Length: 136
Image (tube, rainbow, N blue to C red; front, top):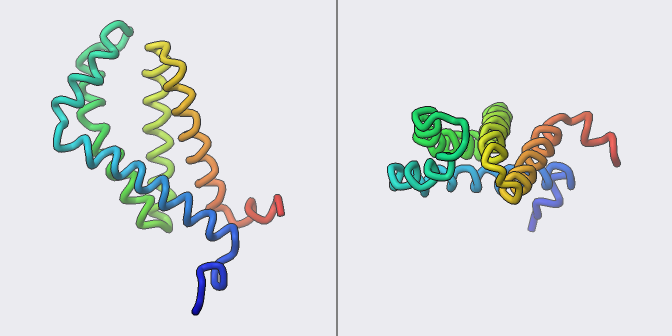
């Protein structure tokens, strides 16, 4: 019986785990929000009412967010060059979310979002074959 560990290095397995985890996470963030999009926008948008962001801008972003999350997840799960762009899109999404979160001074959520930033960083770095061997 051939195991993954027989045909893949530890670094390749780590990259696969990261890809599947981030891919499913982003895919499902979008997928569960799309059917209840109006409710999601109203509930989430209300949290930004006391920030400097105009409601129209906040709502426009929130209406597109689930589709961007879904697309990021699909790209990551496909892998290869698609995965690379999925990681970049996911990192951009998290950066925009962090901007809004810090405007609300929601530091606990910003801390959680930093975990995503680190995960996207590590995922992208893991795609670079040269950097994987550097710390062996």
